[in-house]
Length: 116
Image (cartoon, rainbow, N blue to C red; front, side, top):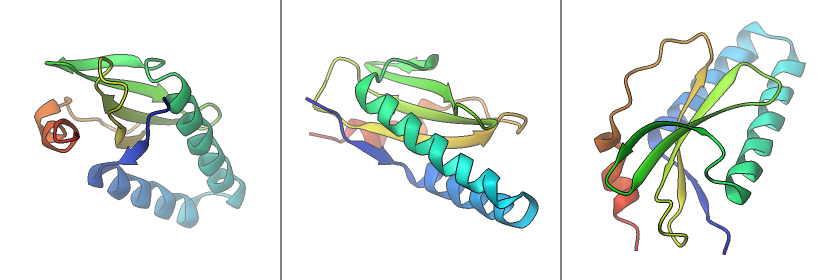
């Protein structure tokens, strides 16, 4: 069974900010590479959800980080490795030099834990 991949509202906001920055400040090829990298990471996570480095754990949920392959961005995602029917949630998207907050799993737990 392949897990569905979903975007948390925080990740959607991050994505909009990253795209807007790239549109204003970078060559068009950077936006293309970013979008291509994100698509590749989404495929990777569907096939191998435990591929990223562990950032935090809470109960059965794991928060992991995976870098995009050719651009300096990181994707944080959370899922329950014991429940294959549960979705993988992309929860944040950061530039690698961007200051990142300490992960607070409780911010994403209600969304992720409410799946049936």
